[in-house]
Length: 302
Image (cartoon, rainbow, N blue to C red; front, side, top):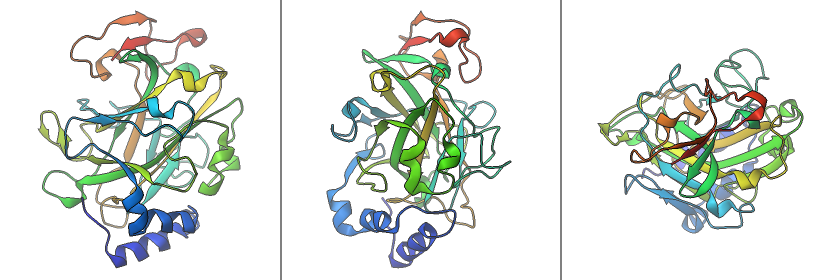
């Protein structure tokens, strides 16, 4: 794993204080101090591949049942991957899905609004039976540089998922310290907003078939139990916030030589790794991101 030297740390702090990067400075400092790293909980999806893991209970009710796993969906990439969240920034990047924020450049580090970064509703998510746990699934295509390059690594430093009956995105905008106002918190990788002790490390060049770089092969899938969404309505907005690169940053360059990071909601039977045992249990008419008539869900085994 590459480590940031002192100039890298100084640059990260500077980035954190720019108008478009308002992650609280003290939180960034705490996450980057060596002592904090020693206390960090890491799900390592690099050293052993394929691999999966969960964080301990306490980040949110039932959060210990959220599974982070390697995945190698082929092909991936925009147009095939069909993301609901796209973002990009050198070193540390963050964003959340919304159709607001302008054309193209959106809030925080969001890109390609509103075609590839847009609103998502609970009724659009398929239900997947993952090891006996009914779950929603979110898949990451991390477009970092490929095999043989130290910048192929990327840390996923927080994921926070909210639901809201109304559109609350504008109340947050570019201010990451306000993310909790998006709605009801359904899952948090870290218990406190702005801290990143729990993080995941991925290698964007890993694939089951060899090595890849950039878009073309997805990298990680997150299974979130549907039980965490108890009481939510199918019409509720689903907000997915994430920050990457605190422990291991994105590629170098003015924007980074890597491409966009992209997240999609997994809806199709072919998108779920299951060793060939997937069975459709309920639901028809999977289209695009999974718009189901009258809120009807798909249930898949994975």
